[in-house]
Image (cartoon, rainbow, N blue to C red; front, side, top):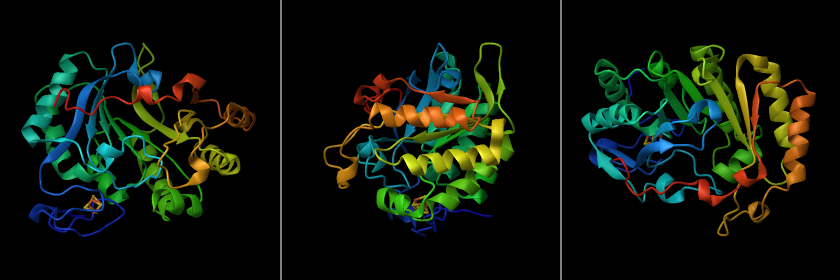
Length: 299
Ligand code: SF4
């Protein structure tokens, strides 16, 4: 399938905007350049991604999803970000590797795929050898993911909601459950089962993240059942407790933290149904202090 910025259909929104002519897509970005918020070593991913030296995280501005509880709204709505050329993007990947990054971690890159692919190819030709991690909200088109085959080593998608109601209310994307399920199936097929190096760093594989939201225990249990039935130990699960309520969130039920008992109950449930490859978080992970400054560092 041929994608173009003149009639953009890169993500499941398929809004058809002419980004090349300056029209802004639902993802919040226009034009042909890539907008970045930050490119730096990052230590707050799963241990097999952050390791001891950090993950080379490149934070892209804009996002096809509009989650009402977004922690990075300035960046996800592309209100901040510095424009870089494709050539500069290649240099950034190589600079992060030279700083000791265990991997290149592309955070919310979906809507820049057409600029990203040649930048990654050029970086690999110029000596990029560390794994490439594709870190996404899970709202992806299989046709777009097919373009990444051979370029991405690790997929790190969210699976946010198993139900249409939650997906509509919290991310304005009622098709999210089917879209994410199909996208993750493609990702897991591309990477195969997890492969680690001698230090325990992930070289290939798919980690599925799920952020626990207040009062949605039944939905999370259903998702855990579905993932375990589908993948068994073929993927790694990351059950996240770091939800941080935003005072301006329009959904009243989300303006409070996840009670520790709710999270602990879900961890016990995951163990009980036989999920063995999983990361769980400690309570202190729920803090806005884990959000880096999107001040153009490293860009
Ligand atoms: S990537 Fe942006 S412009 Fe392209 S279809 Fe998605 S929302 Fe629209």
